[in-house]
Image (cartoon, rainbow, N blue to C red; front, side, top):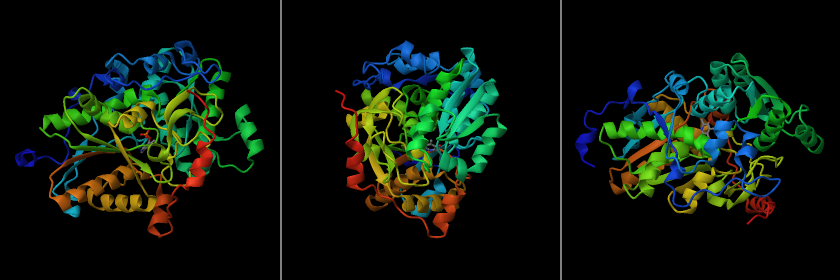
Length: 460
Ligand SMILES: *Cc1c(COP(=O)(O)O)cnc(C)c1O
């Protein structure tokens, strides 16, 4: 890359409001090997529109099944809401580059500049709008660390919809402030497992003092939606429709880079269910698949929850209660209980079918990082770039720093772009443990992994 591109580059590669994407990009339309269809757990057959529409909103179900339309227009009311906090900035991390002494150029797309504090609002806005447009009364969902629940509460408040959130019990107790933000936006928040659903009561009877899990909260939220007229269930990651909505991250990133004549070499993101990374890489992966350009696309996972790097590519349940459709994905098994790490958003047992297929086809790489090194990277980043990152996002920071340090050894001036998905203001307990030197790593043992994988359903 010619050096002059970077001379006089502004710190923030801003886009104007008018430059915001008008359509989402559906990567599946360009994928040669399409992700495998969702299966109905009752029949074992591909889930139909009617079946999906009994759980999700109609438009969500349509988008879930659409693997041929590359561009899907963003309805005007959603674009109006996006204007409240978008376009999000693409920042040239010049202070981090200086700290590392690297010839690499580092950019990050910052999705934390909204009250929910993460990229999840991009899909929450879309799903809340589609539910309202369908004439529904409300939506139910689960939340782990609380970012998704907060985002959905904000979106439902804006579009005038009831919002019921099943929050994993440990988070409900450890993060009272997140819970209170949701209450402020009008959501009803229930600690999961709860006595309010059949599946919750069953799990409580079996595991009395359990702190809950994401898979269990999903089962409760789905049951609650089915039990109430005019309610549907919405999900903040993993699903194809969520990847679609999050493509706005990658489209804006690409527009901003193109505007300044910058071509990235490596694009990095943390991966829990895969939505921020799927959105960030979408237009770049599209170019790669169509043979127009080449990039290294990198997923970063916690060593304690390594779905891509150590999981199996197989059909599995998306929830503990086994009532959601089955997805073919890299999975650790739906019964997997991750260690109590501080990156709540990265503790899901599976991975988006889209990203799973890209990884399986060698179009995307994956790596793991350990919790303590992630927080060290977060601290270093915060001290020079100013933003206090979410623990999840800091996985991408750590991987980006490692790539930049490799460039320092080789003298290569690579362009590295990573997704900074959110802020960490509600993760101060985690930062406290790190600052006191009390934080530990929780690598996953082979025997725990084997045990969990041995319980995968036998399909195909
Ligand atoms: C939820 C979350 C993630 C992980 O979810 P993906 O679907 O993998 O993107 C990452 N960062 C933040 C801040 C989150 O809230």
